[in-house]
Amino acid sequence: MARPERNREESELIEKLVHINRVAKVVKGGRRFGFAALVVVGDQRGRVGFGNGKAREVPEAIRKATEAAKKNMVRVPLREGRTLHHDIKGRWGAGRVLLRTAQAGTGIIAGGPMRAVFEALGVQDVVTKSQGSSNPYNMVRATIDALTKQNSPRQVAAARGKKVADIVARRGDIKVVDGAADDAADEAQAE
Image 1 (tube, one colour):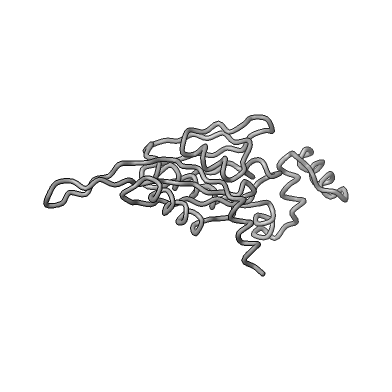
Image 2 (cartoon, one colour):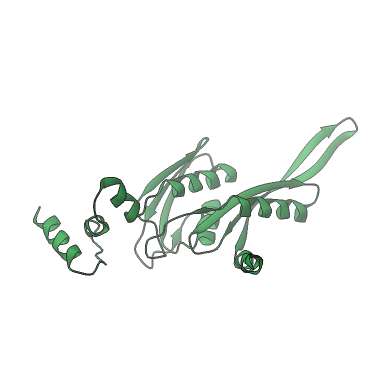
């Protein structure tokens, strides 16, 4: 019975083609041309993956890259389902990225390869800056690296031995009920 669920999950995934590169293999008789594709896959609800594939024809390279991306998916905690929990830096090779959380209505302010990752992930508001290498492979991997470093308030609270309400209250956007967050916010403002 799990198979229909899995097919339904796979059909909900969106695929973004980030980059296609023509590559050549030098052989005795000359060059043999092929194609390399970089694809990002996500469910727009906090899961994203990337993959690359090589083949003699473009559609086959895209298919291979998509399969690799589906196998390589990671879960990313999102704040209110629309942005990141905190600012983070990621790095891969010579590519460095800075991801900053943003207010509602900001939109995705990101360049090519990073934009594809955020659209597949389901992020609606984020501000980014890429530094160093502009190679799409490095930018995508640096972005995924940064996203996997992100901690949700629940993870931070568990690591510090505190309550989630204490962590969220310090952020300023208080969404916790029972008055615990109100007390914590009053204490934070008094300091």
